[in-house]
Length: 501
Image 1 (cartoon, rainbow, N blue to C red):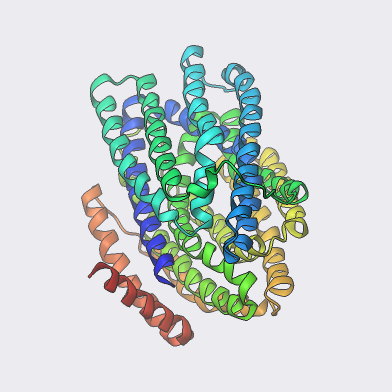
Image 2: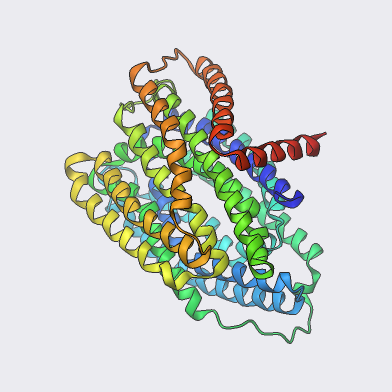
């Protein structure tokens, strides 16, 4: 990785690790103080916001993909034109978002099975809606210009500072006022500060975006944006309907249990996304400059990425159940289940396997060619979830997720390898096959001799020891099975040490 990619990776990884830590700490006290029903409510509303955030994804993906071409050509006029066009579309989608979320705000309390004060649910949604609307009207346009210019580290370090501030405020409310509406108000304050800081940075470092005379016009993106929007709507159905199905058909306690397990695996997914985001802009520009170099960089990226996937989920399968036992010991519902960690990890690994293919599709702009794969995955996922949730609860929605992912992932990998990278898909699957024995060994150990931790401190120490030992094992494994990736890892480690020296 180049220096900028390395900085992006360190910044993103730092933010994701801190988010994972905070995300484990805050919900624990939140659930212990307010109860699993309110935790389920908070998680369900988060899913509603995630579903509606699909309105902006078609804009971001296409705008960034367009900017790669003009950044490579150093054409500031066209960069500014794409930025202005995205700004207008964000504003338009902001009004669409408000027109949808306001009716939902007043109808949602009637859809959930658990009895909670109507006023509390409405205020919950209103506060979250204001924060999300500000992203449409202001914040997201600044993020896309930074991502396209390979400066995503700026957003991450600002987010780290505000995450620390928000955590302190949340804890203060939890342990003093214990007011659930005041607790939700903290996020709005943090969003305002983030918007202010990022806008000042962008205006200072990208003055050409605001010049009064900008004759260039962005090329039409209607077709591409429509293709991306279809795929992203399907993606939101895949990622964000499980909690809504559970809260509607199984209750908020089931939604709370699901959210605890999901947070762990999604936290690992966010760490993996740090690797993807760090190299995305650099790979995107290379696609338009030197295709052979692009293929080589994609090959190195997917090898390192799969190393991280199998390492993180191997550690996770060993420590998942003991963590749930310790983390939920004082909560008011039964959270421990032997099968749920396996199901969650399997679902997330199937999704993570296709990330290199998605990077290739996004850099090449092949949105139209792959959109229906996402649609069919969503149909499979949602249909099975609705059919099975009444009989199997959380297991039912997870079966829907796994079957849907098992359909789409191989097809997407085959398309990206053949149509974009111009190689046979077996190159990728051989890398998967090389790692499977190690992961299956960790799975067998977790079932045969599970760890037992009496408290959180003991679990942390066990996790640290396990992570170090397994890291050594994984490095040795990659040395045996894939020498080029081993050399890439050693080179990356040297860069990290040099950067910190």
